[in-house]
Image (cartoon, rainbow, N blue to C red):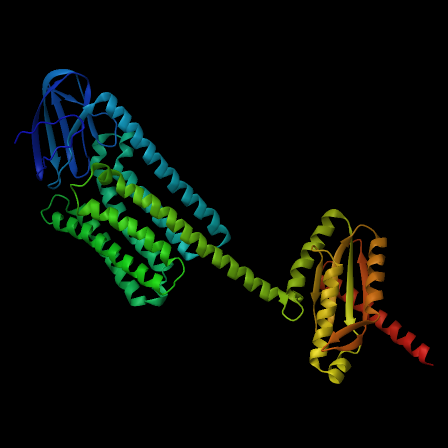
Length: 484
């Protein structure tokens, strides 16, 4: 079979399994290169004038051809029947297309590395199973593209063709498995449809098994069946997960819409790659890579949204655990955390640490006489006032039924005393209004200041509590003296 090749035209000649030999007769008016795909080859050789020529380091098998008239013998040992896409092109065109190809691939590898680094940084702050699975998927798909496009042959010898091909087959299986595990997690198939998830994962393992089978029996006739199972099994699995993403999107599962759009792009590219083999050359070569790049970005957005929701839920849970729901200030747990920061800050900077301990006077009597709704209003008013008089960096909390504390760092004793006077004037007697009724309430306040912070928070609170009870006793004594 003879075929005339013009510059940049892809040949339609197909290889048969085993040894294939071709005689090339060339008559060129400028230097050029002859190239074909490495995929599916065991070995190859190019002989010209009885001398075996070495290929140019390139992703594809590439031989430089000289200007003028000559003939060459090309021998190719193929694993299976396929079209290797023989083509020749002028040397200048080849260099330009190589630069474009390397630029596209460099952008893809850069994107993949950035996404993996991004996931690594986030996973340290927010441990999540989907993050780990996404990272594994990106690593596998990047390895698959690297082995498929042959960039490794720029740095390693061509005699490692078989080893690279075996690694390529393994990367296909691992990519399918990692993608399936990730999709089942982010689409919530694992929790919503556990049986469906099991089917998907089993299908991915079958694809991995077919890849391993091809690695073992690569020259056996049954390798063709394994290749078909690998290709169409992957396509069927992507279509099934695609349908699941659509279903979950309709069920309003978070991120399912983004995953559906991402899978749409990949599914279309796979149809061109596996079924429409004679389609546009650019689509055949770069469609798959571009599709996976876009998919990776969209999935990164989906993962980011998921992490954002997890972080918000975590923050909400922490707030609920640290905030007093009635008064909307710190509870005892929240106070312990913030107080520890203030104590550490005082140890480093040497400021004075002041604690104000407030206790509502006759709170039980207030509740019994006017009802708990009045008591709750009094507690809210104390919390509101304390929060308005203290700074954002200070710790204001309700640590008991009617007990409040405020902890802050001060530059001098004068500042602490001034703040105490301010609080005492207000809490000596204040009025709360509820349903057009007015109620007089008072609270006792004690304080303690420290130039050297106590060893424990309990000691700090105990000092404030003791000062408060002393102040309460003094007020009672004063009241008794005035009533005599």
